[in-house]
Length: 610
Image 1 (cartoon, rainbow, N blue to C red):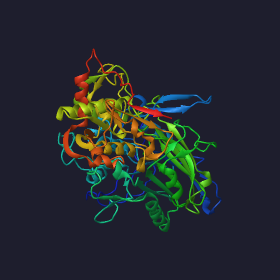
Image 2: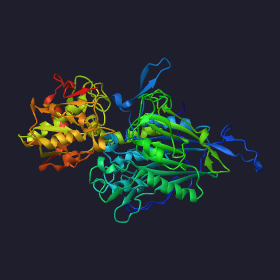
Image 3: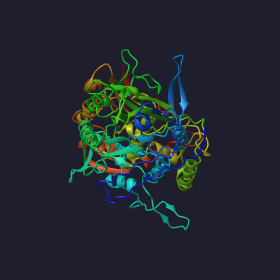
Image 4: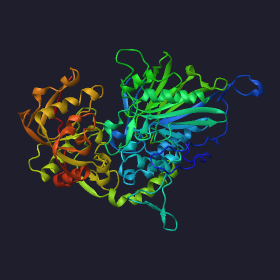
């Protein structure tokens, strides 16, 4: 496969609106610079010889999270179902390969548009996160991304920073990271593509903070895109990140703007939504529409898809980091394509939308879609390699510094169970940090979503096997959360543990990782709050006393009641410690050496009953 970048498609960049968190300018129509080919237009026999239908190629991905370099360990693998029914793990991802995959896929497709469903930035590895994700925005520009919705992580640094990602300009505190040929600070240019945020409004003005929709217009073929993030974003983002913003119902918002597009004569509509589901199989090539008990897809996206107006022809989704290509009936009962391409650039989705020039709508019965692996066996895109190398030189002095040693892989993100070895290790590190601030600290709780990768034993560079570098530790915990101490009663702790599996978390539990000494049983045969067995909750072998006060360490996100755990936000006597990454690195330094590396924890704190 050729890795030579294609010429940039003209007309990509719009005039900028410099007001932070204000309505952004509509991007101009795209003009593809690719040659027409046979097989893309379908016969109509209309006057003038113009074909009635044309195949529009929709390439999409989601939840990239700044993974410019190939993700390590299980975070960088997809599972493929083989013809004989067995499963195979395939190394995938990395923007050098994603660029090659997308450029190759576009060949012989004169009508091709590329879209994403949020979380392109945020929770990123150090190579991007250290520079406030400017490298990722540059990479997306080079990929010729046309449009994306916002995700919850686009709000990690607040609305003003998101507006800077769109409009450009140097960071208000850290300044410009790069220099031009004359050695002067080089201004960050921002995204060439529009970020869409139809359901995110300014509390004061009531207006969307970014453009709610965008229309791709090529040779008279028009496809509208509406972008939304999950309504529950405030529950999973720090309060500071969503300050002054209001998040609205996904279905109501999409239906509102679909009606507006329809009145404008745009009949073909795609929704980019940062919310998703869980397929019955973890294999990327699973037949989501296969019959049988337990097949198909579950989760929030199913109800949303069933409620979104039939005016929308396809949904590109994200957030759950799952891979699926499913049909879910729209409110009229008509099948509609709903897709997600895993995460970290490991997959991309190729969807064919047959556009009828006469009706200006998509012929729904002919929609086809499939996920494809971003294989590392193909050639790297040289321009992406150059981009990575440029930023790597700036990051290397920090990224390559050793901070600890491990004896084997310590799974975190891809552990596949409620409790992970890395989750235990991080909770222990936070408890150790808490005890250095207050010897009376009793336990620590860590949110699973804050663990972004595994710790891999194999060397990622020249540091040697088993060496944990600052960059690798940053990839695991990139949020810069502080470790806070609060007082909670035993009754409050029980309530918080039950909130993991009830209320907002009943459908998708958020199982906290716990420090050494805290144990309990999670009975998955029961439902709701009953899944946490109250009598089993013990600290250092003793049952929690509902009336007693416990000193609890948890990050700032959880201390604010994040992840649908409001009881944790009721803590008293707060004490703010260092950031979580420092706590983790300090623990690794104090408890490991080259001849005595840390072994993966046993994962025996939460007993699972199935």
